[in-house]
Amino acid sequence: MGETGSEGAGGKTAVEVAFAKLFGAARRQPYASLEERVDRLERLASLLVSGQEAFVAAIDADFGGRSAHESRLVDVVLALKAATDALAHVHEWMRPQPVAALRWFRPGRAFFEYVPKGVVGVIAPWNYPVNLALSPVAGALAAGNRVLLKPSELTPRTAALLAERVRDLFSAEEIAVVEGGPEVARALTLLPLDHLVFTGSTAVGRQVGLAAAAALTPVTLELGGKSPALVHPDYPMAKAAARIALGKLFNGGQTCIAPDYALIAAGREAAFTEHFTATVQRAYPNLADNPQYTAVVNDRHHQRLLALVEDAVAKGAQVQTVAPHGAPKARPRRMAPVLLFGVNDQMRVMQEEIFGPLLPVWTYRSVDEAVTYINDHPRPLSFYYFDDDDRRVADVLHRVVSGDATVNDTMIHFAQESLPFGGIGASGIGAYHGEVGFRTFSHPRGVMVASGVSPARRLLAPPYGRLVDAGLKAMTSRVGRWLGA
Ligand code: NAD
Image 1 (spheres, rainbow, N blue to C red):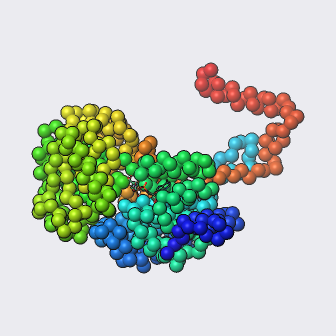
Image 2 (cartoon, rainbow, N blue to C red; image 1 turned 30 degrees about the horizontal axis):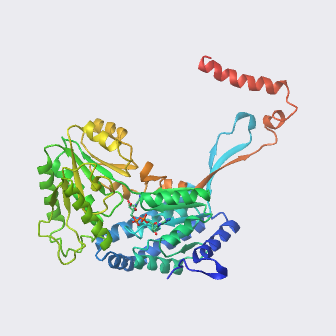
Image 3 (cartoon, rainbow, N blue to C red; image 1 turned 90 degrees about the horizontal axis):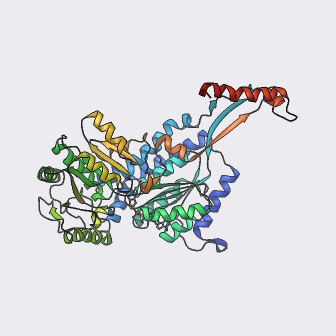
């Protein structure tokens, strides 16, 4: 077991004790060499490789039914990719970057270098409990930091396993895992961390932002929201409906970047339903006991999803349950997919992030109307656009502001470690993954190495003489001439 939030030595909480060790080490040794970073990243990679079967089993038990393929793919392989990508590139990312010094200061040299921030806090959610805990850790270690990690209390077996494996492979001065609920997470946000990555809901993200502001802690907020999937009228409906269905139903719809709702041309509802249903039939024959179809994580979330459907029906939505082989009975939390038509903004299903296998379908008369609808709502984490016309794709991508986007599919941008991943507005602040993550967790420090023989040394010091006056005047008048002023 890892640390918990209870009282530790000297009246300090376990979170404070864990932080003090990391903080002390970061202040004693603020820089990590390439060899140290490589060593830590290799240990992180080996933790994932050797622990993969145990992680798959723990996540399955925590969810009460989580597809082993989904766990291996996202929680193990993609987190491993974050570590191996950093291993392959960290030597380039760390390299100091020379820049031109102003003429008067030459032959002095200027360069900047990405240096470690110190101690990075990571607060993770339950929906990909290994990936969203360890991918930020990979970026933070590559950048030479120490890490204080708090996994989600909703996946307690996975959290305990993470704590145990980290303790086996890392010292308490490198990474500490603290287990516990919101009170432990809240205590973590109040610490004078050098950076904090929070992945979770927008509502909690707001509280995290407020707490971090008081400590002047820089934050990366990876939040949620409603990611739309817009299908152009000319795009083949069979392809669009299939890709939206597979994106929606991956992890039982419990993905921050799942297509939350679809926007299709009016009159194409029947075609959409037909192809969505055919895809479910192909992908998940026997929905009830299919171990590849992930369950809703707990009863509270299951009840929340049923209440969303009930609310929409009461307000006039038409519901189509997609259960080609009969509704799941044996595992009630393996919820059959539900399509909702005739939806509007009075329904909770169009107000809240869904996070489950429900898909509202909003119909439009023109693509412009659909773009306006999306832009009238909080900025999405991801935007999906289905269209084969490159010009229109470029135009629509420029008109819809979102954290990230995938064209002609859903979610696959997340798997590209070299793409930045993050939200904008209500869906988040900042980004990580790959080199962008390395920069997020580093401080770009500018360094000027002065030269005793540069003209600036002699001229830019009182008493200022006529040469300085002439030089300063020449600079402004040169720009003035260029501007025609
Ligand atoms: P959540 O916000 O309820 O909890 C996330 C974490 O925050 C947990 O570890 C929890 O203990 C902690 N927490 C709770 N109260 C806190 C507080 N006051 N201060 C600090 N931390 C606190 O989210 P969840 O239900 O675990 O995850 C689902 C949400 O996460 C969805 O909204 C989803 O879209 C979002 N999400 C976003 C991403 C992304 O990368 N942008 C990825 C996955 C999930």
